[in-house]
Image 1: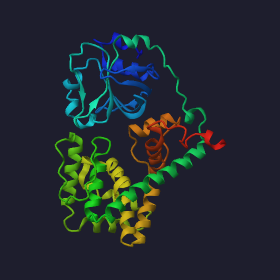
Image 2: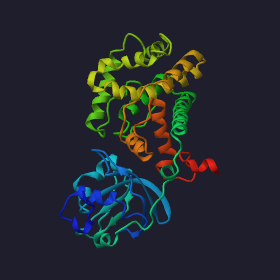
Image 3: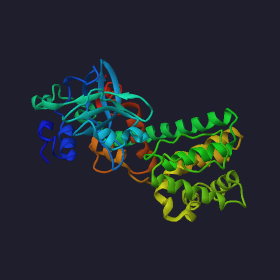
Image 4: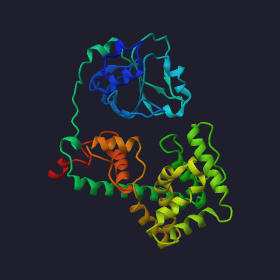
Length: 366
């Protein structure tokens, strides 16, 4: 689709507006917002999914301060309220609301469900003058990439760092005195919603507090209900005993399949794809932390070995975006390397901290 200028799109489609935004013509220009700020777009972000903001992880300079957040595009300012974004927590991460044009009533504001005021950029006729980026960005990971073998090794190292961080989080909650069963259930519950609804573990809650919040979307609510039903079916053996026993039942070789089978009674409500994400991001890190916490070295070692050798996890939007960004022909193989992409994004790529990023060869010559 040709990236037309927004001043021609006021009666057109938001898809065409999104194509214009993704073209990057706005990058590097200092523009005034409706509420008196000055914004410069450094990176327009990656395309969002079917739900939530239009672009994720855009990088902006707002009054000289670097800001990373989402961007929502509308043809008219009234669409923010008309689409009920102001009452939807999925839009709380929006850093900039960009409007193609149209009338702007006195007192118009963009407000998130948290009550935070979001800068509003009215393009109008300004867009017609933005024919090219003011500064053409250069990404070192693309201009001086690591050799494929070096990148694969680095991704596994970053995956191990991501797993270790999750282990440390679980261990900290155990050291704080939270009941182990509540810790693991809280983390598994959050992993069930990952990528759709920001749910944080609540280790202090009782293990029965698993009913979905009214704020979560329908798919997340279905998964959480199925998880609650699954736990209800485990009445003959406590959760901790079941997880630890399944991990140690036959060593690490088939451990992944044994743990994955625990979710089978949920059928398609959770499914093996989401169950795999829960295992790697929540269950296995907890089991490593719990093993270390209670002096069960065999449990900790087996759980970590299972995680390191885990097969491919389901690709999501971030995995695909990072694969394309690094110029890889396909996502890296194995959960560890795939999670290395997430670690790279979280620590360097999301905020475009390229000077410190280890994913390019220029650092090797300094």
